[in-house]
Image (cartoon, rainbow, N blue to C red):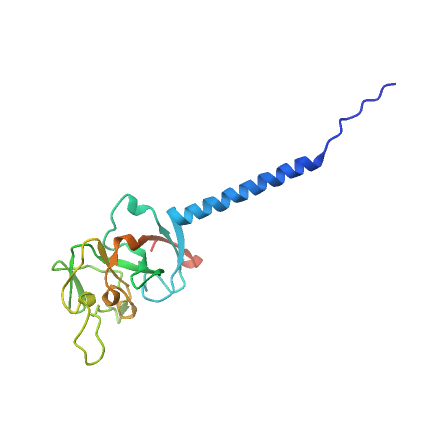
Length: 201
């Protein structure tokens, strides 16, 4: 009586093939994550109260890094950018002045090209918007930088003027000047942490 035998199989090559597939998938996933952060969307953490009430300290946000390939930055955008004093440091502020805009202050309010800017996003105190004040120089000094808003200031071409929504607790362009266009990183478009603040800022 003839007996049939099943062909011998070798599981080791199959296991090696599966491991290789997983390794390739992992490499591709890491590469895509890197490309995503480098060119499309990147997460950032809010380190201070300068953007209250729009963004709270320790909020985590996502910034769109490719948007400005398709349109220009717009007044009111919340932007992530490199700090002019140290380009290794990133800041998050609201875009207030576009290239060529003349900014001024009157009674604690911002005027752009002679027209009062509507700013519903400002922090409030006693039911009133927190006033916007110019940067004051050292005690006894009359020297202030041109961009302090102690006097009307025209934003240079190719630059943008940034301010926090919590004006009394924001270090911004009133202190360190406008931000060059090349230092804009992207627009903040989503708060993803903590869960109770999930949404569009």
